[in-house]
Length: 113
Length: 113
Image (cartoon, rainbow over all chains, first blue to last red; front, side, top):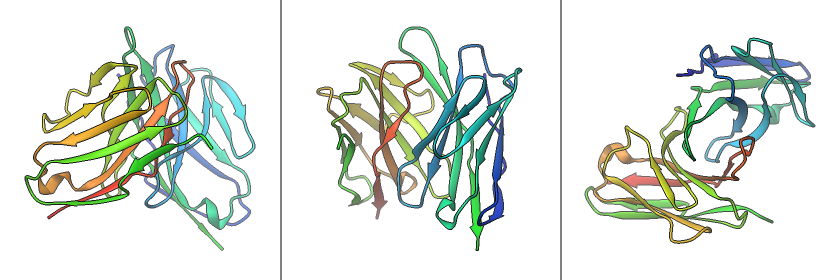
């Protein structure tokens, strides 16, 4: 069963690129990777999702190597408002409509001025 | 705007007194999830509905029950809240597809006295 591991915390400065890596060693062929952002007292918010190689949207990029045992969320030029907790999630689809959600413990990103 | 709504945002109950939390969605999503999130921890999935099919996580206590009377609404019932059940309760929805992301509500903060 997949397990996700990510750093507990990271520090950065405004304008820098931040890369947060999540390890998911036992990911299976059909599982995909999603990243969420959460601010205090709010529900998590979808950032980006991918299956392999590279995905880019207006807020982030997601890099997934060929073996898919890890993924890296890249936030370009962070600002103070990017200070939040970032979660890596692996979704495993089982038989029928069953799905298993493997959440990482979250990476608390602090962006400093 | 399509969204996930949780009521109430804050709920105070007494030890052992049943409480019901409500979630509604205007996204017409097939899947609805209930999570428990304690301070500085990742969201913990309690159960999810795929349409009317109920999927309980193996480690969800019997004290937690859920109802989904229709596509739009889902309820979380805590039959006998204990002090350890004080947490943020998050509702989320997603579509049927394998790549459908979860949309979270703002959460209900439960306090048990």
